[in-house]
Image 1: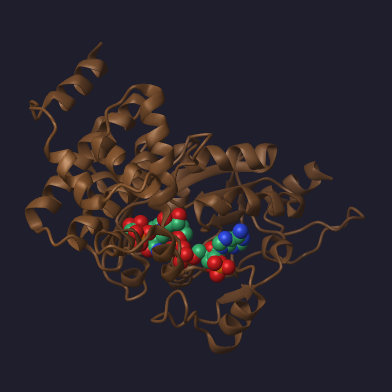
Image 2 (image 1 turned 180 degrees about the vertical axis):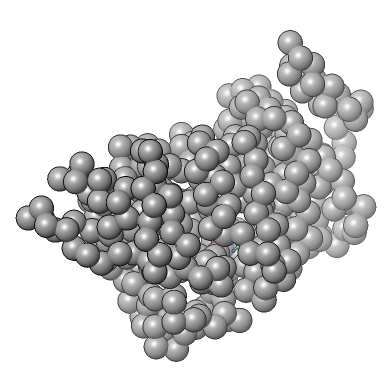
Amino acid sequence: MRALHRAAQLLGVASVSGEGGMETERCGCFFTLATMGRRKWETMENIAVLGAGSWGTALALVLADNGHRVRLWSHRAEQVREINERRTNEKYLPAARLPESVVGYDDLCAALDGLSIAVLAVPTKAIRTVLNQARPCLTAPITVVAVSKGIEPGTHKRVSEMVMEELGEWLEDVVVLSGPSHAEEVVLRHPTTVAVSSPDMEAARRIQDLFMNHHYFRVYTNPDLIGVEVGGALKNIIALAAGISDGLGYGDNAKAALITRGLAEIARLGCALGANPLTFAGLTGVGDLIVTCTSVHSRNWRAGHMLGQGKKLDEVLESMGMVVEGVRTTKAAYELAKELGVKMPITEALYDVLFAGQDPKEAVDSLMARGKKEEMDDLNTIFAAQES
Ligand SMILES: NC(=O)C1=CN([C@@H]2O[C@H](COP(=O)(O)OP(=O)(O)OC[C@H]3O[C@@H](n4cnc5c(N)ncnc54)[C@H](OP(=O)(O)O)[C@@H]3O)[C@@H](O)[C@H]2O)C=CC1
Ligand SMILES: O=C(CO)COP(=O)(O)O
């Protein structure tokens, strides 16, 4: 049966009936072209977006603007009613007005039925749960566009690795989309740039075509999957620290120091994991670090700001009502750095604040009190390791 569905996919037929007869419904207005073993997508695709939070909703709009039909899945029936009846998502993205081509679904299997592409836009900690629920719905392997930014504590897995583990043979391709991109600005169609990466760069280029919008959403490719994912995940740690610094009343000097030295430690860990150092100078490195450390849209910055003002972590997370990925990623990066023997002083200081009750002001004092250092030591070590 799976082989039949795969064959149907290659021929561009959306679904195949259980009795071996083919339903004639096609998943777009142009026929899919069958290529030698690889499906070429239609000009207009049906795409599932799993997770109707800020980012899932904003990306659904980009896809709709590009002429695609989107099934926006939420596990909350009342939110799906709001999407379909009022064309809004007030809690997560109040500025969004959703076109008819974005349809809300509260049934995951119905949202995935007959589709070959799903954008996975739930918080990192929900990825395994959602993919576990999705797997039995699949009748053919699927391409997953992973847009969450985080690293899993304990396993230290990146998002693409979790997707591969959970979907196994049901995964056609995994493509990561990351970069400086606050949903609140994307929905206003303000110019935004992101990068896509994948173990299969041909798949990344297909996803680049799907999302590229020449008016406001520019998508680059970058073959360095590890660097793209590590940069996107770890910038949230530094954004929390930048928020704390602002909350303590420190100024632009302190923030510039956090961004620059934060980038150095992100690059150190990333390179120890096999990333290309140059990726950290790009959109998913310094680009995302700048936007997240300096924007009031950032949930990580906002959470840090409240911590710097003296609020407790539980109270901060409770009041946010949206995901603050940097908290779990701090734990994961702290563990990974210890395991790999990589120095990450800002991450360690933040870990102490978040998980060991350290006073934020004292954490800053300890960072400043460290011994002398040569600024470019990190880069020299990284480049020396690359050459050897
Ligand atoms: N917002 C942004 O600008 C950007 C976000 N990202 C990344 O995208 C990912 C998602 O973020 P974002 O959309 O902002 O997060 P939000 O907090 O805005 O929304 C998360 C959504 O996921 C849902 N969700 C949470 N847990 C589950 C679960 N177990 N099963 C099903 N649905 C669940 C939430 O539902 P509920 O209402 O029940 O909580 C909510 O709809 C994060 O990794 C983030 O770092 C990346 C780039 C930009
Ligand atoms: O990743 C983001 C922007 O690129 C969103 O950051 P926050 O999760 O901190 O809002």
